[in-house]
Amino acid sequence: MSSLLEILHKEVVPAEGCTEPIAVAYAVSLAAELLEEEITSIRLQLSGNIIKNAMGVGIPGTGQTGLPIAAALGAVVGRSHKELEILSNLTPAELKQANALLDRGLLEVELKDTPEKLYIEAKVYSRNHLATAIIAGEHTHIEFLALDGEKITPPKSKADCGKPGRADSGYAGSVDRIFEFIHTVPFGDLSFLLEGARMNKAISDEGLRGNYGLQVGKKMSQQSAVNLFGNDVASRIIAATAAASDARMDGSAMPVMTTAGSGNQGIACTLPVIALAELLGKDEEKLARALALSNLVTVHIKHYIGRLSPLCGSGIAGGVGANSGIIYLMGGSLAQIKHGIQNTIASLSGMICDGAKSTCALKISTSTNAAIQAATLAMNNIPPTTKDGVIFDEVEDTIRNMERLVQEGLADTDTAILNIMLSKGGAV
Image (cartoon, rainbow, N blue to C red; front, side, top):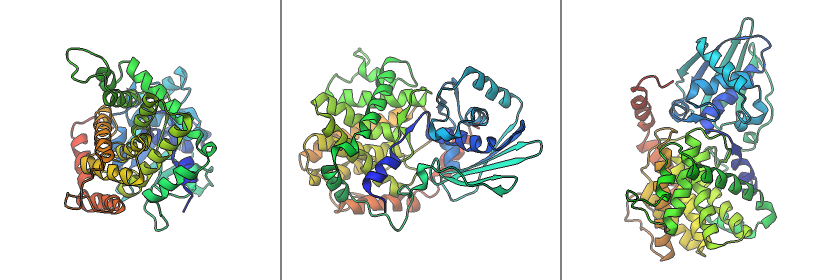
């Protein structure tokens, strides 16, 4: 089992654009870079969760949405070494070249029948050669790379260092262990999280300024006759968090610090903490420790509900993580943090994921509100009990049974959601 500090370094990384279509671009780029001839076709085989999460999201710097432009850009940019920042510094010439590739009808996308939730198989053809790249399990984990069937050793990635985001017998995370860690780790070891805070705060500010997506955060923050939200602390925190998702989902080219493979999860678990720390005047050390807590609790929840899931990871895992960070900033105890986790799961456990798109900002605003509400109850020492639905007396039992909810209760939910989305036509 990796140390919690190693997990933070692995799971909290920058990305530009929604991680599912960017991971598709990354896979195509890995394969395309092996060819020295003009590309004649690209064939993608993708798991349902990848298609679901890539269909409706804006691609940075393009003004376009979805899988086709992401895949085409991966074929032309030649920057696989940048992993999830592969589309940073995109040029007009590259965008023109990618659109020309699409205009020629060279891209084919198929649904892959696989139990793996995160699976991307990119086959890129030239006149005389075939290059194949498979990403599986995590957004930058290269499962297979080959040219004309001859396997190639892939470049090293952070995703090669253990997999707390996937179920494994060696996983030993717990809220108790995380709480002890954030109180004992040297502040200097956590200072890198402050760069992520600046990154996520910047895209939040951009979302509040611009007219991105549904403008959830912006309209919440504007005082008008049609806005029932006030200028209180809770409204300001919710608006700041939703605004970052507004901008990210609508294709802002600004980077985001992701958590457990998702930019929206990074936004959901960090921005409420960042906003509250600013409102309370907390110093950088207190903020860094709160961010370590919120990120690690999010990763802990994600271990059980899955890297990609029928449940909304940003809402549920991100909301629970944010709740823990909020309670810590308010001076809460370990017992109160556990109460907060229980309260937040009781509120959000049924939130489904219907892909990455502009309405993610609505889900994140809902989860942030729930996190604040749950923190208020927790600080008053009010938790749910084992008599209440899916809640168990021990917080770890509640968290572990989220996996059972996904595997047993929601086994067919992803398929139903994807079929509903595909029934609208023109999705991929």
